[in-house]
Figure 1 (cartoon, rainbow, N blue to C red):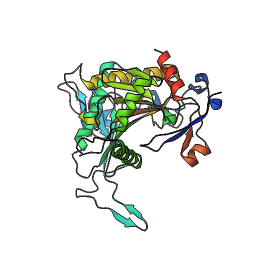
Figure 2 (spheres, rainbow, N blue to C red):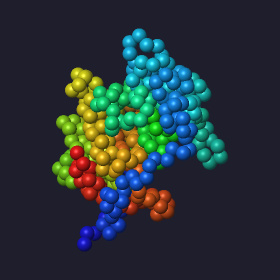
Figure 3 (cartoon, helix red, strand yellow):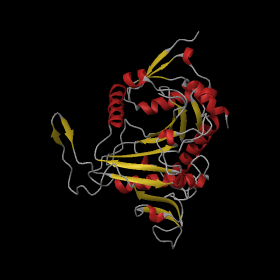
Figure 4 (cartoon, helix red, strand yellow):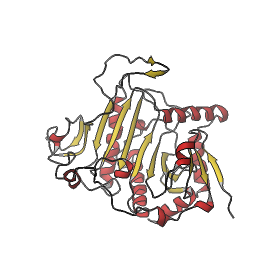
Length: 351
């Protein structure tokens, strides 16, 4: 009988319990029911009134950036990746042009909710996804992620650019047209700050980057590796909180995603990374019956030199039939019902 393990990530502080007796088979974790878009206008779901579709450009705020055919005008057809401000932004770029100052509100701290909130419309096709688009289109999307971060990170009030995608209603998507988002903040989010502090502690104690050590260890062990290219690795994290949580990261040390090279095009790291990301998403789609998922990028804060102790990484968290209940929500410790080792094997098998 296998022994249960309580695993801890020394940088994020994540605790998970791997309990062999509580494991669920892949079949029980796959998406079982059709997507429920009932809370979204059916004409948006069908594409008839989708603001992200071609010829509907007037339904969004004016675009701030786009990859489009030469000779076509902003806010007209001809684009293949398009960025607009979010119609209902969480932060506001017009609050102030001065350096933000923190003030007290009783025992709490507050600053104006300054920032940028952009929607990246990833492709003209309404019912596609990063897993099903062409590899060239996926590269263009990731290139836009990089360009957009570079556009906003020069603002001295911006401390962090958080890039994420909600795919499917159970992951928080408001509609089916493929899109990701960038929220540029005047603070470093708490989860990122915890990672940075934990990574710095590990560096001070060991004189090594935790993520570099983790990547070397995962490659050596091999059990949780899903796929590997010359410069990138995809694996199921040893301390994955949920089933089939995948991490993709460069093997060589790099702390800031926007510094990824784009040359020579076709053989550059960005192309290689986009190829691996798409292949992992295809594996997840096949293994878990096209599940909803959250995808997000953890990178170093803006306007920093290369950090020796931090390493950018992208995470994908599929929504499965596993239940996050009172123990997980109340304690912050997660019981993962599919071990990262078994999950990696499941994902390796499908392609």
